[in-house]
Length: 79
Image 1 (cartoon, rainbow, N blue to C red):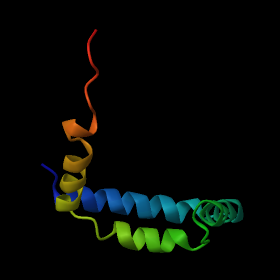
Image 2 (image 1 turned 45 degrees about the vertical axis):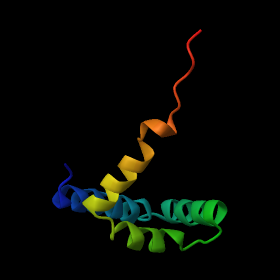
Image 3 (image 1 turned 60 degrees about the vertical axis):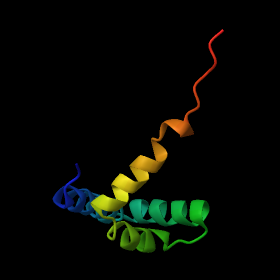
């Protein structure tokens, strides 16, 4: 079971990491450069953090259920 307070702590940690990563000119340029190079938008992290802040325990459980389903990992045939 996942508690909402655990999710909020994780989101706060992610936001803090993002904030402190941009504390220096080097960190800011790295963050913006990564976003531009990888996502084509230097402000990508702003929208990313907004979307992450909407995540709920139900979302996590739904994704975990869909991605860890045994049918996603077909068994190998034994010889």
